[in-house]
Length: 304
Image (cartoon, rainbow, N blue to C red; front, side, top):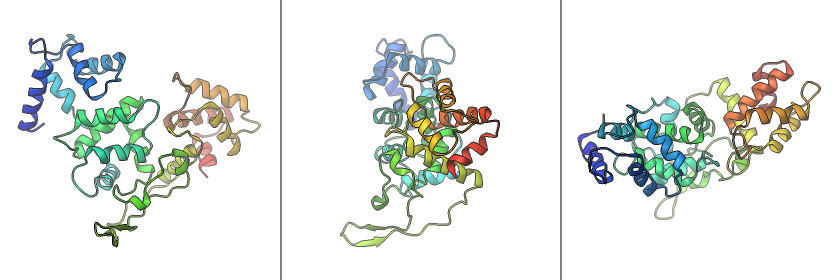
């Protein structure tokens, strides 16, 4: 439950947005508020958010519905997500907007569906004061998943498998291009950095990291290969998909190049004809069915 001062601030925002003064918000009033954070937000996106917030389906948002929309219950943070949050928050208990945007950029969350402006809007929606705590961070990840059209588990898996570096470790900054991260093995927590006086110092040592399971290691390798074929937005088109399967020796007597193109078309539902990593794994399941083997076998063939 949000604190009293937070509810007071939300109440003031609600009353300011309620230009009709009837004690409820219609879709146009909510649209005016949302477009202050993201002027390019489409009518369809606003309608989707409005319907999600309008839980009693009366076509108007009460203050309680508006507060739930702002402070909705956040997913529980796993140990891995707590570690990611701590890394990018620089060990602090809260994360500011700059660090949140860096996380989205460094962990390749941006694509054609999620732009930097969308990340700023999400941050503004879920933040507590000027920062995100862990619960708000998890809520932000849910919003990112909704925007990208995937499950939050896929977003969390992407963050974890990236081997995210410490947010203030500029010497180990991850390249912006997803393809440049193909061989990345994670940030060096003890890398040297420069202090305010310009002297080279070592970052403090942290406790032991949680050991990755064999499944997590295989998934990370698969993601590395995917990123080596994906574009700068982290998406994969049909040419890159077929090239990946051919160069990884998945295309053979049991799966032709034409089969690969057909599978891509069956899985890809986006207008820009590109796959996300989640779509890629679904496509590999269909590849496995065509070849008459397990999806895990196909993933191991690609990931090595």
